Amino acid sequence: RVLATGAGFAAGPVPKLQPGWVRVADDGSAELRLAVAFGLQAASVRGRWPQDPVRRHWLPLDRNGRAFATRGTDRKKQLAERPDVVVTGREPVADALALVQRRLIEGAQKGGRHLPLQAAFRAAAHPADLARLIAGELDLAKTLALGRALGALDAAAWARQPLPPRAPARGPVPDEAWMALRLATLAWPLEKRDPGGDPAIVRRLAAGDASGALETALRRLRAAGIGFSLRAGVASAKTARLWGAALAFPISLSTAKQFADRIDPAAHQ
Image 1 (tube, helix red, strand yellow):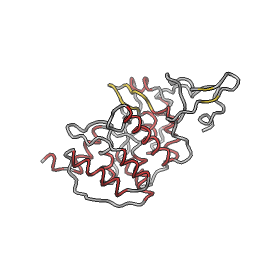
Image 2: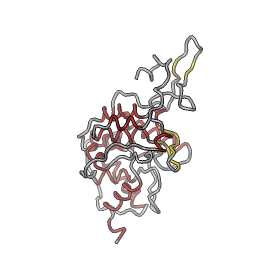
Image 3: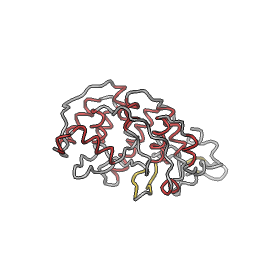
Image 4: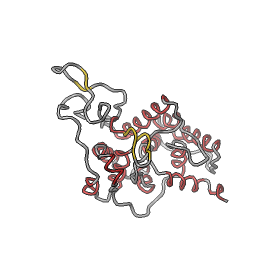
């Protein structure tokens, strides 16, 4: 936070960390696993190689990501104020929502219709951890603090030799209403079914309107050929915002397919 507000930046960003740091830090917690997914995600992944990682959203970085972007003269140099620096470290739900909303804006500016947040190789969020997150059982502040630190991981080294934390034991699955929201805000088409990503879904979740967000998501899913028995849903404003924050943790394509199969089993009959 001190760096992001313009003081103490002469030393530069934390140098790139090797993947082995994840193994050293692995305490078996869901928070650590989700932090890895959060910190390593990027706009896209080509093969194993991430493109446009998210670290610039909590630190103003130059084009190569190795130094801070600055303004002013040498005597009065300050960190540059960047509109893409949206993760402040003050309130975790607001930070996660801000990241999702910023990426949706940037995706739309480039003509995209999906949420450009993709998991790094072997670093996707696990459904059991997401289920606990949206149930309010995890420490989101700790998760994002770890995620910001792990944003310094060397993405190229991770692509060559990923060292993911231990997988969780089989656990609960997320609420089906949240699965619908997740499927309506994917980073890519789901095979031939492509609901795209409507920014209105995230705006409504951020405003605490779970029913409105779910109605929009279900409409897009049905238009894409994904059936769903649920017609409506109700949740508190706090839960709605937490559902939106959980979208900041990328899932794998296989997990997305599992979600789709679970809510629309008739598709394979």
